Length: 475
Image 1: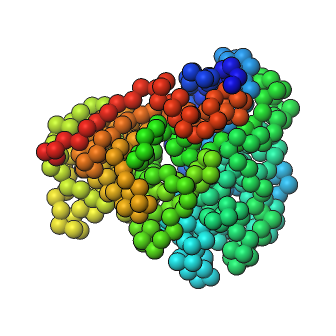
Image 2: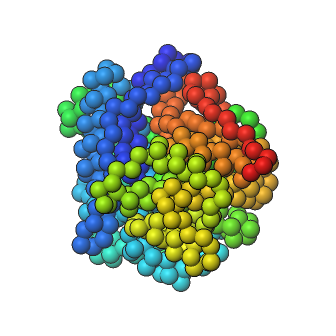
């Protein structure tokens, strides 16, 4: 095993992006934030888009800071949210990627299901129904754009292209498109032909740990990085990286990667493709080292962040810590709504939408911000607990511990209430699971960590602070 290495992680989330420097060795795992920058939808005449070029400029600036701080950085890994993509012709990007919350995606659902019923689609790709999966977005794509494009690159693969000029598709994120065969792990060319999509649009697949390539001269000049630095594929779906760094050293662990979304599930050796899994809308996404992330999407902290955004439109500044303290004081006797309902998917006045959902069902409507916040926390905790229970039942894997990582691990009320609803121990942390998972996969490729997924998780558990919440029997 080699000595410690220094690597950089570009971690792009739905509301912000970061560049992190990571120092990793046999008994060392540290990450340091070098840059943080906002991210969000941009409304253009044809719909909601991502400003990926602005994200890339910010990422380059962060890499420059990392190079100044850390000196020799040997590797760069990129992770982001799933499903969204850019079309390329040669080296030219054909416009900014659409945002998954844009309403165009819904148009593709009927188009796809008219050719491939969802039952058949699930058997092929193992994915839960989400109206913004890439397969539906591509079905709604402008045919003229598809006619001139020669490649489709998911967001982290697009950033890798900007850095190296290479066009590849990392497998964990490719598994979220709906176009990867869940059994073979290869692009489903028969499905592509059925949907009228050219298989040549989809690039060669790479695995986490594979080298993508060296940095382009212009990137070296802009960042000050060494010419020895390589871009290394990681679990480029941010949840795949987060699950790598979830310290599930014991049998019987479930995970909740909790940020804008709450991704709730268990890790399996093979996909779960039963009729019951399909009916429960569980998904089988690729994990690092060939594992399967069997999980369900819950709306996540989006419900709270979008509520806060609504409340701040009148010029009020909401202090999250104070708001959560007020929510604790409200008590648990608040109405619970379905945190997986698509009614809460789009941006907008979330408190009004929650109130309408409850009112339509004859349930008590929260009247204050603290009450709405408590209702959100209770609803998320119950949804998380229900999803863990269902993941266990469908996979046949007994669960005795729930690991909550990401920003949600800092929310003590959410962690405790999840433990209460589930009747299971909750271990919270690490907060930086995605960045940690990104850097340890890079470090393994450099020979600086153990070779197995379990050894990487053991390193995380030994070097990060974790908090345990026991279920309360009277809740």
